[in-house]
Amino acid sequence: MKISKKISPNNQYFIPFICFILLVLSHTNLIAQEKFKVVLDAGHGGKDPGKHTHKYNEKDIALNIVLLVGKKLESNKDISVIYTRKTDVFIDLKERGKIANQANANLFVSVHCNAHSSQAYGAETYVLGLHANRQNFEVAKQENSVIFLEDNYQEKYAGFDPNSPEAVIGMTLMQEEYLDQSLMLASNIQNSFTDKLKRKNRGVKQAGFVVLHQTYMPSVLIETGFITNTQEGAYLGSKSGQEKIANSIYEAIMAYKKHIDANIVIEEVKPVAPKVDSKSRVFEGVNFKVQIASSSKKVATKAYNFRGLKNIERVKVGKHYKYYFGNTSNYDEIVKLQKEAKKSGYTSAFVVAFKGEEKVSVNELLSSK
Image 1 (spheres, rainbow, N blue to C red):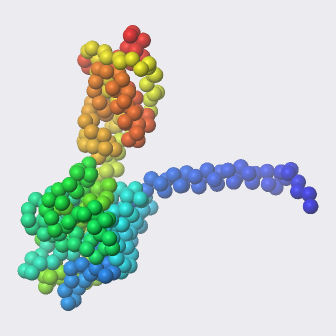
Image 2 (cartoon, rainbow, N blue to C red; image 1 turned 180 degrees about the horizontal axis):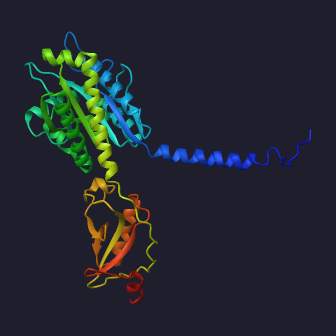
Image 3 (cartoon, one colour; image 1 turned 60 degrees about the vertical axis):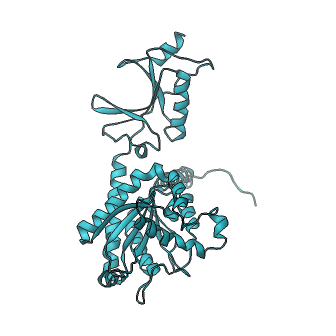
Protein backbone atom coordinates (compact mmCIF):
# COMPACT_ATOMS: atom_id res chain seq x y z
CA MET A 1 0.00 0.00 0.00
CA LYS A 2 1.36 3.36 -1.00
CA ILE A 3 1.63 5.92 1.77
CA SER A 4 1.12 9.56 0.83
CA LYS A 5 3.59 12.10 2.29
CA LYS A 6 1.25 14.98 1.58
CA ILE A 7 -0.04 16.85 4.66
CA SER A 8 -3.79 17.14 4.46
CA PRO A 9 -5.71 20.19 5.72
CA ASN A 10 -6.79 18.08 8.72
CA ASN A 11 -3.27 17.41 9.91
CA GLN A 12 -1.36 20.48 8.74
CA TYR A 13 -1.36 21.76 12.33
CA PHE A 14 -0.42 18.41 13.81
CA ILE A 15 3.37 18.73 13.44
CA PRO A 16 3.55 22.24 14.96
CA PHE A 17 1.33 21.00 17.78
CA ILE A 18 3.66 18.06 18.46
CA CYS A 19 6.66 20.43 18.45
CA PHE A 20 4.88 22.63 20.97
CA ILE A 21 4.15 19.63 23.22
CA LEU A 22 7.79 18.50 23.03
CA LEU A 23 8.93 22.01 23.93
CA VAL A 24 6.63 22.07 26.95
CA LEU A 25 7.80 18.63 28.07
CA SER A 26 11.43 19.68 27.64
CA HIS A 27 10.83 22.80 29.72
CA THR A 28 9.00 20.77 32.35
CA ASN A 29 11.95 18.39 32.52
CA LEU A 30 14.33 21.29 33.08
CA ILE A 31 12.16 22.53 35.91
CA ALA A 32 12.10 19.07 37.45
CA GLN A 33 15.87 18.96 37.38
CA GLU A 34 15.99 22.14 39.43
CA LYS A 35 13.97 20.69 42.32
CA PHE A 36 15.36 21.01 45.82
CA LYS A 37 16.37 17.47 46.76
CA VAL A 38 16.16 16.24 50.34
CA VAL A 39 17.45 12.81 51.35
CA LEU A 40 15.69 11.44 54.44
CA ASP A 41 17.54 8.71 56.30
CA ALA A 42 15.76 6.60 58.90
CA GLY A 43 18.49 5.30 61.18
CA HIS A 44 19.19 1.58 61.59
CA GLY A 45 16.70 -1.02 60.28
CA GLY A 46 16.40 -4.74 59.62
CA LYS A 47 18.82 -6.76 61.73
CA ASP A 48 19.95 -3.54 63.41
CA PRO A 49 17.26 -2.33 65.86
CA GLY A 50 19.38 0.58 67.08
CA LYS A 51 18.72 1.57 70.65
CA HIS A 52 15.83 -0.35 72.14
CA THR A 53 13.85 -1.06 75.27
CA HIS A 54 11.26 -3.72 75.97
CA LYS A 55 8.68 -1.35 74.43
CA TYR A 56 10.42 0.63 71.71
CA ASN A 57 12.90 0.14 68.88
CA GLU A 58 14.81 3.12 67.52
CA LYS A 59 14.58 1.78 63.96
CA ASP A 60 10.75 1.82 64.03
CA ILE A 61 10.37 5.28 65.52
CA ALA A 62 12.95 6.76 63.14
CA LEU A 63 11.20 5.24 60.11
CA ASN A 64 7.77 6.49 61.17
CA ILE A 65 9.07 10.03 61.63
CA VAL A 66 10.95 10.01 58.33
CA LEU A 67 7.89 8.85 56.38
CA LEU A 68 5.82 11.61 57.95
CA VAL A 69 8.45 14.27 57.14
CA GLY A 70 8.69 12.96 53.58
CA LYS A 71 4.94 13.10 53.06
CA LYS A 72 4.88 16.75 54.14
CA LEU A 73 7.85 17.67 51.93
CA GLU A 74 6.35 15.88 48.92
CA SER A 75 3.34 18.19 49.09
CA ASN A 76 5.65 20.94 47.73
CA LYS A 77 6.00 20.71 43.96
CA ASP A 78 9.52 22.18 43.97
CA ILE A 79 10.89 19.59 46.41
CA SER A 80 12.02 16.07 45.60
CA VAL A 81 12.34 13.53 48.43
CA ILE A 82 14.69 10.54 48.37
CA TYR A 83 14.58 7.90 51.11
CA THR A 84 17.48 5.68 52.13
CA ARG A 85 14.86 3.20 53.31
CA LYS A 86 11.06 3.15 53.41
CA THR A 87 10.71 -0.26 55.05
CA ASP A 88 12.34 -2.26 57.83
CA VAL A 89 15.55 -3.19 55.97
CA PHE A 90 19.23 -2.98 56.83
CA ILE A 91 21.21 -0.39 54.84
CA ASP A 92 24.99 0.06 55.12
CA LEU A 93 26.17 3.47 56.35
CA LYS A 94 28.27 3.83 53.21
CA GLU A 95 25.26 3.02 51.02
CA ARG A 96 23.18 5.71 52.71
CA GLY A 97 25.73 8.36 51.78
CA LYS A 98 26.02 6.93 48.27
CA ILE A 99 22.26 7.31 47.76
CA ALA A 100 22.49 10.99 48.70
CA ASN A 101 25.56 11.67 46.57
CA GLN A 102 24.17 9.97 43.47
CA ALA A 103 20.99 12.02 43.81
CA ASN A 104 23.11 15.20 43.97
CA ALA A 105 20.95 16.16 46.93
CA ASN A 106 20.75 19.57 48.57
CA LEU A 107 20.27 18.17 52.07
CA PHE A 108 20.81 14.95 54.01
CA VAL A 109 18.75 14.48 57.18
CA SER A 110 19.28 11.40 59.35
CA VAL A 111 16.76 10.64 62.11
CA HIS A 112 17.59 8.68 65.28
CA CYS A 113 16.66 8.21 68.94
CA ASN A 114 18.92 8.45 71.96
CA ALA A 115 19.31 6.22 75.02
CA HIS A 116 21.00 6.38 78.41
CA SER A 117 21.19 4.44 81.65
CA SER A 118 19.73 7.45 83.47
CA GLN A 119 16.44 9.30 82.90
CA ALA A 120 18.17 11.78 80.57
CA TYR A 121 15.84 13.50 78.12
CA GLY A 122 15.72 16.14 75.37
CA ALA A 123 16.57 16.50 71.69
CA GLU A 124 19.91 17.32 70.08
CA THR A 125 21.08 17.70 66.50
CA TYR A 126 24.56 16.88 65.26
CA VAL A 127 26.74 18.00 62.37
CA LEU A 128 29.98 16.33 61.44
CA GLY A 129 32.96 17.56 63.41
CA LEU A 130 35.61 16.66 65.90
CA HIS A 131 34.09 15.31 69.09
CA ALA A 132 34.17 18.37 71.31
CA ASN A 133 33.98 16.23 74.40
CA ARG A 134 33.84 12.64 75.54
CA GLN A 135 30.04 12.62 75.70
CA ASN A 136 29.66 13.61 72.04
CA PHE A 137 32.15 10.94 71.06
CA GLU A 138 30.21 8.29 72.95
CA VAL A 139 27.00 9.20 71.08
CA ALA A 140 28.80 9.00 67.74
CA LYS A 141 30.47 5.73 68.73
CA GLN A 142 27.10 4.13 69.45
CA GLU A 143 25.65 5.18 66.10
CA ASN A 144 28.84 4.22 64.22
CA SER A 145 28.96 0.74 65.79
CA VAL A 146 26.46 -0.45 63.19
CA ILE A 147 29.34 -0.93 60.75
CA PHE A 148 30.28 -4.09 62.66
CA LEU A 149 27.05 -5.61 61.33
CA GLU A 150 28.06 -4.95 57.73
CA ASP A 151 29.81 -7.49 55.52
CA ASN A 152 33.49 -6.75 54.86
CA TYR A 153 33.31 -3.57 56.95
CA GLN A 154 37.10 -3.38 57.35
CA GLU A 155 37.57 -3.28 53.58
CA LYS A 156 34.68 -0.84 53.03
CA TYR A 157 35.88 1.69 55.57
CA ALA A 158 39.63 1.24 55.00
CA GLY A 159 40.30 0.04 58.53
CA PHE A 160 38.30 2.81 60.23
CA ASP A 161 37.74 2.00 63.90
CA PRO A 162 34.59 3.68 65.33
CA ASN A 163 35.95 3.10 68.83
CA SER A 164 39.07 5.20 68.19
CA PRO A 165 38.92 8.96 68.85
CA GLU A 166 41.96 9.43 66.59
CA ALA A 167 40.22 7.73 63.66
CA VAL A 168 37.43 10.29 63.75
CA ILE A 169 39.70 13.33 63.26
CA GLY A 170 40.40 12.75 59.56
CA MET A 171 36.70 12.30 58.76
CA THR A 172 35.69 15.93 59.16
CA LEU A 173 37.84 17.58 56.51
CA MET A 174 35.70 16.80 53.44
CA GLN A 175 32.53 18.13 55.11
CA GLU A 176 34.16 21.40 56.18
CA GLU A 177 32.84 23.20 53.09
CA TYR A 178 29.24 22.50 54.14
CA LEU A 179 29.64 23.15 57.86
CA ASP A 180 27.96 26.58 57.89
CA GLN A 181 24.88 25.27 56.09
CA SER A 182 24.72 22.15 58.25
CA LEU A 183 24.88 24.29 61.39
CA MET A 184 22.13 26.54 60.05
CA LEU A 185 19.78 23.60 59.46
CA ALA A 186 20.68 22.02 62.81
CA SER A 187 19.88 25.30 64.59
CA ASN A 188 16.54 25.53 62.75
CA ILE A 189 15.65 22.02 63.91
CA GLN A 190 16.58 22.65 67.54
CA ASN A 191 14.76 25.97 67.60
CA SER A 192 11.68 24.34 66.12
CA PHE A 193 11.75 21.61 68.79
CA THR A 194 12.19 24.17 71.55
CA ASP A 195 9.83 26.93 70.40
CA LYS A 196 7.00 24.83 68.97
CA LEU A 197 7.12 21.64 71.05
CA LYS A 198 8.69 23.02 74.23
CA ARG A 199 11.17 20.14 74.21
CA LYS A 200 14.36 20.29 76.25
CA ASN A 201 17.05 21.72 73.98
CA ARG A 202 20.27 19.73 74.34
CA GLY A 203 21.82 21.91 71.65
CA VAL A 204 23.58 21.69 68.30
CA LYS A 205 26.71 19.57 68.57
CA GLN A 206 29.55 18.21 66.50
CA ALA A 207 30.72 14.62 66.43
CA GLY A 208 32.25 12.11 64.04
CA PHE A 209 29.29 10.22 62.59
CA VAL A 210 30.25 7.91 59.73
CA VAL A 211 26.90 8.38 57.96
CA LEU A 212 27.48 12.17 57.79
CA HIS A 213 31.04 11.69 56.64
CA GLN A 214 29.85 9.78 53.57
CA THR A 215 27.80 12.68 52.20
CA TYR A 216 28.94 15.62 50.07
CA MET A 217 26.24 18.14 51.00
CA PRO A 218 24.89 19.89 54.11
CA SER A 219 24.01 17.06 56.49
CA VAL A 220 22.59 16.65 59.99
CA LEU A 221 21.83 13.79 62.35
CA ILE A 222 18.87 14.31 64.71
CA GLU A 223 18.64 12.55 68.06
CA THR A 224 14.91 13.13 68.56
CA GLY A 225 14.91 12.14 72.23
CA PHE A 226 15.60 9.35 74.72
CA ILE A 227 13.53 6.18 74.40
CA THR A 228 14.93 5.15 77.80
CA ASN A 229 13.21 8.06 79.53
CA THR A 230 9.79 6.96 80.76
CA GLN A 231 7.83 10.01 79.58
CA GLU A 232 9.90 10.84 76.51
CA GLY A 233 9.94 7.21 75.39
CA ALA A 234 6.14 7.16 75.46
CA TYR A 235 6.09 10.46 73.55
CA LEU A 236 8.45 9.18 70.86
CA GLY A 237 6.54 5.92 70.56
CA SER A 238 3.15 7.61 70.15
CA LYS A 239 1.57 8.58 66.85
CA SER A 240 0.91 12.08 68.16
CA GLY A 241 4.51 12.59 69.29
CA GLN A 242 5.91 11.34 65.99
CA GLU A 243 3.62 13.66 64.02
CA LYS A 244 4.68 16.67 66.09
CA ILE A 245 8.38 15.86 65.72
CA ALA A 246 7.96 15.30 61.97
CA ASN A 247 6.18 18.62 61.57
CA SER A 248 8.96 20.45 63.45
CA ILE A 249 11.62 18.87 61.23
CA TYR A 250 9.58 19.74 58.13
CA GLU A 251 9.21 23.38 59.19
CA ALA A 252 12.94 23.61 59.94
CA ILE A 253 13.81 22.28 56.47
CA MET A 254 11.40 24.72 54.82
CA ALA A 255 12.89 27.64 56.80
CA TYR A 256 16.36 26.55 55.67
CA LYS A 257 15.24 26.33 52.03
CA LYS A 258 13.63 29.77 52.24
CA HIS A 259 16.90 31.24 53.51
CA ILE A 260 18.94 29.56 50.77
CA ASP A 261 16.48 30.64 48.07
CA ALA A 262 16.62 34.23 49.31
CA ASN A 263 20.40 34.20 48.98
CA ILE A 264 20.47 32.89 45.41
CA VAL A 265 22.38 35.40 43.32
CA ILE A 266 21.39 36.02 39.71
CA GLU A 267 24.30 35.78 37.32
CA GLU A 268 25.00 38.83 35.22
CA VAL A 269 25.44 37.83 31.59
CA LYS A 270 28.33 39.64 29.95
CA PRO A 271 30.65 38.96 27.00
CA VAL A 272 33.48 36.55 27.59
CA ALA A 273 36.84 38.23 28.25
CA PRO A 274 39.08 38.66 25.16
CA LYS A 275 41.63 36.04 24.21
CA VAL A 276 45.30 36.78 24.86
CA ASP A 277 48.56 35.11 23.99
CA SER A 278 50.51 32.96 26.43
CA LYS A 279 52.81 35.79 27.57
CA SER A 280 52.55 36.88 31.16
CA ARG A 281 50.47 40.06 31.40
CA VAL A 282 51.25 41.94 34.61
CA PHE A 283 49.86 45.47 34.94
CA GLU A 284 51.24 47.52 37.82
CA GLY A 285 48.58 49.51 39.64
CA VAL A 286 45.74 47.47 38.07
CA ASN A 287 43.45 45.06 39.90
CA PHE A 288 41.84 42.37 37.78
CA LYS A 289 38.79 40.64 39.24
CA VAL A 290 36.25 38.10 38.04
CA GLN A 291 32.70 39.38 38.23
CA ILE A 292 30.47 36.38 38.87
CA ALA A 293 27.14 37.92 39.81
CA SER A 294 25.07 40.92 40.77
CA SER A 295 22.03 41.21 42.99
CA SER A 296 19.73 43.76 44.52
CA LYS A 297 20.11 41.83 47.77
CA LYS A 298 23.05 42.02 50.13
CA VAL A 299 24.26 38.42 50.26
CA ALA A 300 26.75 37.14 52.83
CA THR A 301 30.05 36.35 51.12
CA LYS A 302 30.13 32.81 52.48
CA ALA A 303 31.29 29.98 50.23
CA TYR A 304 27.90 28.25 50.45
CA ASN A 305 26.24 31.24 48.75
CA PHE A 306 28.71 31.11 45.85
CA ARG A 307 28.89 27.44 44.92
CA GLY A 308 31.96 26.79 47.03
CA LEU A 309 34.04 29.76 45.83
CA LYS A 310 35.92 31.47 48.64
CA ASN A 311 37.32 34.98 49.11
CA ILE A 312 34.34 36.68 47.46
CA GLU A 313 34.26 40.49 47.47
CA ARG A 314 30.97 42.40 47.60
CA VAL A 315 30.82 45.99 46.31
CA LYS A 316 27.72 48.19 46.26
CA VAL A 317 27.16 49.98 42.95
CA GLY A 318 24.05 52.15 42.99
CA LYS A 319 21.16 50.01 44.26
CA HIS A 320 22.87 46.74 43.36
CA TYR A 321 25.71 44.68 44.73
CA LYS A 322 28.47 43.31 42.53
CA TYR A 323 30.23 40.11 43.54
CA TYR A 324 33.86 39.57 42.56
CA PHE A 325 36.11 36.55 42.77
CA GLY A 326 39.89 37.00 42.87
CA ASN A 327 42.11 40.08 42.84
CA THR A 328 45.44 40.23 41.00
CA SER A 329 47.47 42.45 38.69
CA ASN A 330 48.41 39.40 36.59
CA TYR A 331 45.97 38.94 33.71
CA ASP A 332 46.97 35.30 33.18
CA GLU A 333 46.17 34.55 36.82
CA ILE A 334 42.74 36.17 36.60
CA VAL A 335 41.94 34.12 33.49
CA LYS A 336 42.67 30.96 35.51
CA LEU A 337 40.31 32.17 38.23
CA GLN A 338 37.70 32.93 35.61
CA LYS A 339 37.91 29.31 34.43
CA GLU A 340 37.55 28.16 38.04
CA ALA A 341 34.43 30.29 38.46
CA LYS A 342 32.93 28.90 35.26
CA LYS A 343 33.70 25.37 36.36
CA SER A 344 31.80 26.09 39.59
CA GLY A 345 28.74 27.01 37.55
CA TYR A 346 29.15 30.73 36.83
CA THR A 347 29.25 30.22 33.07
CA SER A 348 28.92 33.94 32.32
CA ALA A 349 31.74 35.04 34.66
CA PHE A 350 33.87 37.78 33.08
CA VAL A 351 37.04 39.73 33.85
CA VAL A 352 36.94 43.37 34.95
CA ALA A 353 39.76 45.77 35.75
CA PHE A 354 40.20 48.65 38.18
CA LYS A 355 42.77 51.39 38.74
CA GLY A 356 42.08 52.36 42.31
CA GLU A 357 38.28 52.61 42.47
CA GLU A 358 37.93 53.52 38.79
CA LYS A 359 36.81 50.79 36.42
CA VAL A 360 38.89 50.64 33.22
CA SER A 361 38.63 48.78 29.95
CA VAL A 362 40.23 45.34 29.89
CA ASN A 363 40.53 45.50 26.08
CA GLU A 364 42.38 48.82 26.18
CA LEU A 365 44.80 47.50 28.81
CA LEU A 366 45.58 44.42 26.75
CA SER A 367 46.06 46.39 23.53
CA SER A 368 48.49 48.72 25.32
CA LYS A 369 50.99 45.91 25.89
